[in-house]
Length: 120
Image 1 (tube, rainbow, N blue to C red):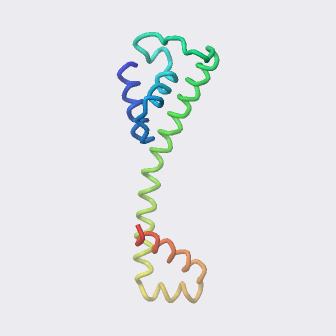
Image 2 (image 1 turned 180 degrees about the vertical axis):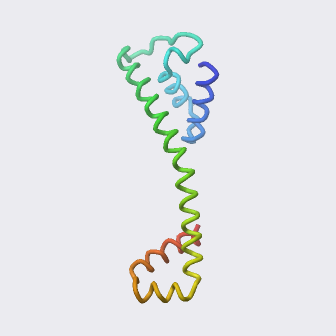
Image 3 (image 1 turned 90 degrees about the horizontal axis):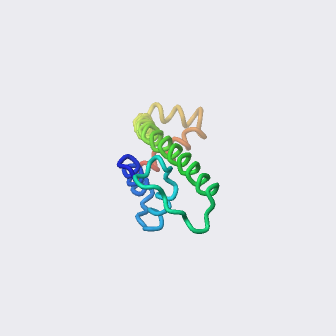
């Protein structure tokens, strides 16, 4: 594989926590010819169409994985900030009393969220 594909493959292996020979071979098999230093050897039991389909699926999975990985960081930050804000709100006796009187169902949900934070 060319250096950029090696880096992508290493990142995928790390992200999936999968370091087996089988997984590495599947990454090589799903690598387009343009990303290989030497042309692929024919793979027994797979037609050219099946190999092309694997390459397309691998490219699609790479793209989706990177999108999810990118969004996860922002979503996690939002969750941490929101949970901290709710914890601070619920530590105020006046706000707690108001929510208990007017919106007990919402208060219960807020308390569940803050309790989950304490558990982790």
